[in-house]
Image 1 (tube, helix red, strand yellow):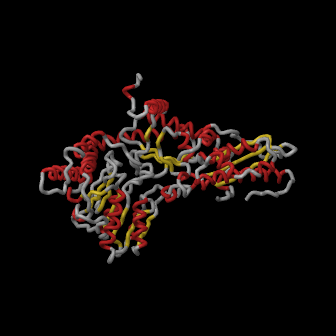
Image 2 (cartoon, one colour; image 1 turned 90 degrees about the horizontal axis):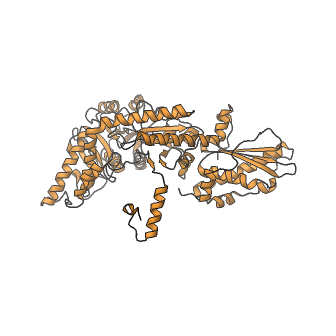
Length: 428
Length: 134
């Protein structure tokens, strides 16, 4: 009962005691999966809270103060979001997240311009929601070109130039890759697209807050933004849609005609306020934050390199966002590694957890050997990561890699100087 | 993924990890799987003159279920005759470890590995390649 102040209120006292004991036994887990999602910044939560309760009005209610109050808050947020990408507030369309933004950008643009220009260009390493939207368009008869990437994960600009035809309506290239963190040359892509009078859409879910973005300087016509990747709430995102020269999209969700007819549905004021606040924080703190996170990332990589042989960084080391380390620990399968370090939350490129048993399509697109793709971990460093946490993670991962290598027949062969590629493996 | 206690125990405290001299005539070695598929199992047995498996060792590159399946099968085959060991079915391994459906292939690999090791032993000892595991 001395622990009463930490007690969880549960109907059964015995259960609550058990929960307490279990929690105390478990070491505090370390979160290193900031590309999957981020915790909402407490300052964001504070900004949001009043809009759930006393300021609950519908921002579309035009004839009373409750509506006006909510509308004002939405307008402020629109400005805050526009501000960090060099856009104007009127060009921001709210959506439920980057997945919806990407769907709206690809399907919306292609369906508006597709009669004359049925061709879309995108990249094989895009997020699944872009690739799947492209597949759907293909099924409806649109033509899609999927650009490959170089070994470092970046597209070849000459290949892009060659792929554009008079029938191309849209080029969609992500700003930052979610798995390997590489930064595509957005400004150069924008120049090429503008010169050829093709619209340029970029999925910047992983780029906002990590790299400087300016829609005019980079000649970006549409940009997808996510709330929960930038310490904002889940369930909110935005699509930037250029007004001059005007980009038209066909709405994918119809109804009351909100968001200039491009996306119907009552705006979720609290979430929008949260996304706005998250952007506002970034506009003040981004430079300093990325400097700190880059130092932590470089420190972590160096520690791994000092301690372990045969580790490989996937994706370009220079053109890379601050918080992403995607490392292959050769001869150790990713899922078993994750099992060993269950106190540390990371992602694995080994899709051994999925039914497909195929390793990451992004790593394969880079030409990473399949056996190495199975050994990759994505370590995501973010706003709340400390050096102490990383030291613990480095130690824990290194011990696990050493243990599993001792158990690995491939490691044994490598030590004996046998080239595992020279063996005729029976594929199963 | 929720794993059974037995599986986690075999993963965390694997039995019989190691290697034997594959050139010894009393040792049979099975190497199955492929690195590109994310699973490779090496299973070795040491067989007495009267055909009893007196020792077994493994090394596995693969997920937790693959490691646990190979650890379990080395435990099971020790003390068995090579015929008994060759009759172990993957379904028994899957049941013992409560493997989830996507991990059944790990138990198949373990069955393949023991069959390959027995076959290698028989070939070495002039007993023919009767039970060669494909």
